Length: 495
Image (cartoon, rainbow, N blue to C red; front, side, top):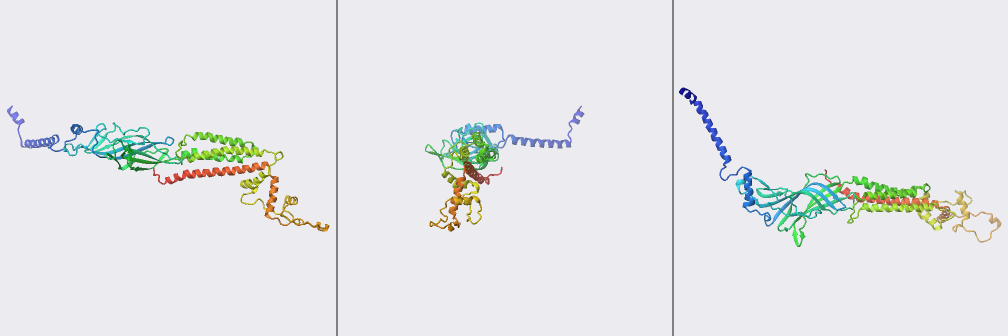
């Protein structure tokens, strides 16, 4: 048995070499464990929940952190806005709704632990407004919730040097004084104003961050297109005899016009032109008054449908509203003018002869404006020639009229008695002057003008007047509303 034991525990040189390796490994492991678990005095401790809890206890309890006390005598707060989307711009209510989140930065030296190397491995801490002071800020032009920006669910992040970062988000509905003159191709500029509350400019100063307007996560709106953004640093806002710091975030929006062109402008202009075509309809058809009333009723019904989209503000006058009022007036006047034309058309020339002054007014003014029978306001009526009796006249009616109408400009017969032989010699009339020609033609035309011809002249006259007014007003409307829109197209960024 002794020999067996000696053989089992017999030490050989190879065994000593193996033991030396084992001892060396044990020493290395011991040193590593000791260095990790027991750091040398004055060195940083590894991160652990116990270490973070100890840091929180030191900051908020041991050092006596007060939430209601501002960090310093004057706190500088840097602000930026990240715009997510434009929800709606209500022209009728003069409000803008948008979604985004603010980012506020300020320095709080009471949260600085960079001087204590024990907590070097803790770079950031998170807390809420319940335990950390935050600047009381509000959106001054808000129309729904005029209160301090606050959200206990949004954590505050601060580093070891006491720089606090806070990102409250929300849907903000603010007042926006809209300019409706160029509706529906209008461009609106709205502001979102952030101001300090309770703390004056000597206590809290608001400044913009390096990139104050962030559009990285912006989503486009189907009705409004974002043209540009701008930040404005206004003068101190006075309230109650004291000045407070404020910032303005300005956005410029352009309405996408295609929907309103197809559903508003084009139908309105088309019905306006139709209201003038009633004067091209013959009176014998018996449909003139029915056609005019149908257009007027259709126009009135369509106005009730689009009235919901037209801005109801009276701060600025909408050019489209003026155009609609003018077109509606023209539609009503076309009905009255149609009644007048029909009244003239069905009068009898025998029972009710046309007054002479009306004939002269019609031939000298109305017929020229209406270009009736090749008459024009820029030329004379007809260049009719008068021939002597020994020549063949160009037209028979004119020769007959010359013998029947007394003309003061023609050569008068001598008062002395002539012999019978002299009476047989025909007198040749002198060449008539232009004034005598015009007088002759006027007399001739006045005898031929009838009530039906007058109604035709009135139809042509009303058509010229109504169509000219409609075309001029339509061209003026599109020129006004397109001018501002075209000027802004070059400034629209690519989406």
